[in-house]
Amino acid sequence: MFRWPISVYYEDTDAGGVVYHSNYLNFFERARTEWLRALGVSQTALLAEDTAFVVKRAELDFCKAARFEQNLIVETKVIQLKKASMVFQQRLIDENGVVYCEADVLVACIALSRMRPKPFPKILPRSLKVEADISFIGLFLQASLLVKFVMLTLLVLSIASWAVILQRRKLLTAAKTDALKFEDKFWSGVDLNKLYQELSARQDSNKGLEALFVSGFKEYARLNKLNGRVPEAIMDGSYRAMRVSLSRELEKLETHLPLLATIGSTSPYIGLFGTVWGIMNSFIALGAVENATLAMVAPGIAEALIATAMGLFAAIPAVIAYNRFSTQVEKIEMSYANFMEEFSSILHRQAYSEKEQA
Image (cartoon, rainbow, N blue to C red; front, side, top):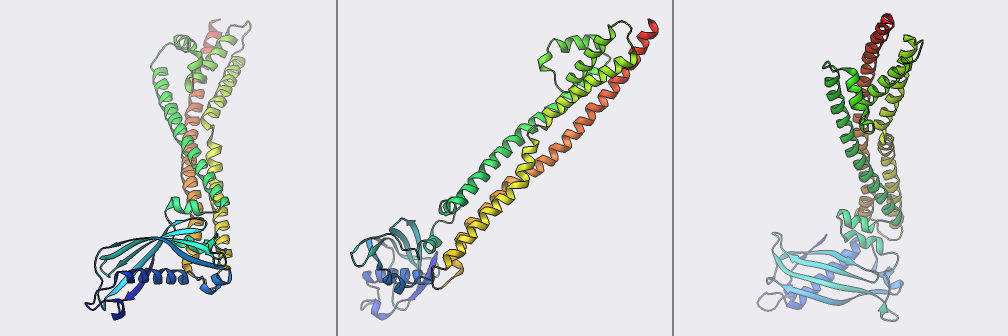
């Protein structure tokens, strides 16, 4: 938003001190000229490139009469920018924000020699973006193709990250709940043979401690039926079977966690790459104008910094979730390992008891 102060002189008014309606157009015209000058664009440079701006359409709404010796402000911003035209939205207000006149002005860029429309010259487009939409969507649309690609990549990574976070959270919560339920049932004094038969009937749905129990007891029962059984061999076989089952269960729990680690570690650098590229283009564009100002480079830097912000937005949840889930997996692994040792002890006593009975 460009703001240009004006004072109402006697030449701007009629005998009663009221501003002529045509002079509001003059106020707006002067403000647009000052806006262009504030961007560091020289009118002389434009004329040298056979370029001029002409008003194609103007819509004014006279809200209140301005009077002699009033100090007013003209607000000017570009609300639409095309290849060879732009639409200004202008308001004449006082220091209290009271509106005296509003206007939407369509300005076209023409070649003076032919009096025909022409695209904006190279010294203008970057400067004109200063007054364009500075919302997130506006900055995204104004960004260069590479920065847009970086932003879209980070958006995809963020969506993938949250999908993994929600899915892993649900799975790990279920794993802890199922482990507690099975341990309660296991230590309730239930007959192990009956428990094994019950779980074997639904073999495909066994997971967690249930899978460990079924694999260990199954191997124990198979080896125990062999002639000349040796307790040490039986225990070693059942323990190995449970170790294999433990590895498979942990693999299920750790699925996609490396993806979170990758997103968390690389997203900030991807965003930084987009930021560096955008800032580089902003400073390169300054060489096309005579007077460099902060207002000229600010939008380019802002749209570039969005890439860094998006990188952090994708990385921070991924890193937090990865650390949290890794800790939960370690705790679940410890509970599984403890169960294996306790179950092995039970099988060990039972194996030697059956040997002595034999």
